[in-house]
Length: 480
Image (cartoon, rainbow, N blue to C red; front, side, top):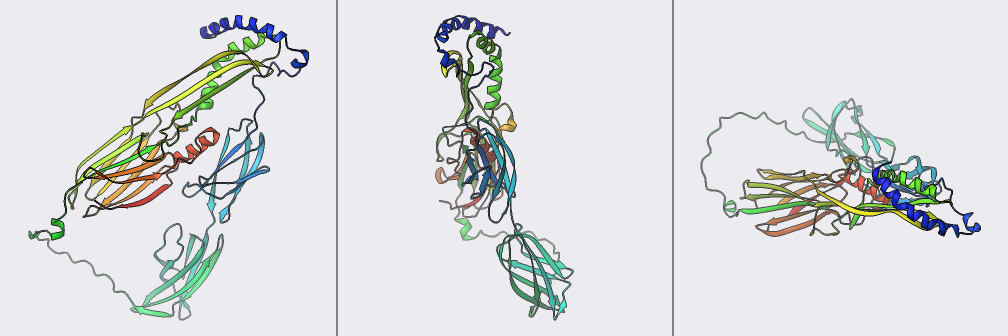
């Protein structure tokens, strides 16, 4: 037995003696309901299961999916999640939505409802086979242009050989089909329309019964001797462009007051191991059946704000000047907020649902600050800013993936910005642009304030959110 266990057990001796008299007063009728002495837990609460549904192509949440687990069913919300009350046991599950391939499997639901299932659905797409003919004869080579809902890969004009072309993975809908070929300087073409149906292969034949002037082939570029440029005055509009100074911030923050610790179950197991000797000895010392009960909670502090202003987990900053021609004076930096984990634990001996003696009660917190990584760069008229920052307090990094975010942008001669962004689905991400020291634009790129952040569902939602950079978009910001 360890020294700490011996010390705690010595302290229990007197308390055990004091409580023996109290237990002895229990009536015989009461003792019939006391839990078995070999049990170390009270009655388990009902089970439960959390289902999170993602798009198999891009890991985005899928809303409106009907999920059935055993006799329970529900529909996923805007974060692709549904929580079902299901008693402990093993059940089949099924997820289905119109236009998507259904998914099924089985899941073991634990008594305390700590289970979750990640389901990926594939959208049911269609196939279109295009063939063409000219004057009733099959056309061996030509080109096809599709206009319509567009497939996963945006289709523009494409060549075909062997009399036709097969287009797979098309989104359902009506397509305009333009097929053509050039014969002796004349472009022959035909236009048809065809609806692509979910999960079906449809065929469309195009007769090239129309003609147009064939495009002229491009001439090979002639090489000419380069001559030094003749100095000229810059255009008037360039003369008027002033030098502007830009500061771009990209940051991520946890909008909740607190979020789940994904390693709580690991930590509680380690903690209970330290109490084993003391608890077993104490339980055996009682003349009647008693149980060891406990509560353990561990969570991380959030930044507790929904908008851009406030504290953060990670902040990346890029500064540069723009004179209408090229970026100069580039500087980048990064900063990180403190990560706090708070915990509290209590263990006690109980009989007849009455606490007889507390054998452990404590709590505390730990904090650390991430050290990597952020980056920023700029050249010519383009720039990039991003970060990938980990949790410095977590024991196993795989249980808490990095927070990731990146923007790429270009700047026009007049100073206007075009910015494309790609962020995780959790936590919240935001962007701030200042020009000549004046805030010009502030955006919340991803608002995670409405997602579940505690309990088993919180573990699933946050883990999926940190592994899915499904939040993308484009911003156009006018200069002051």
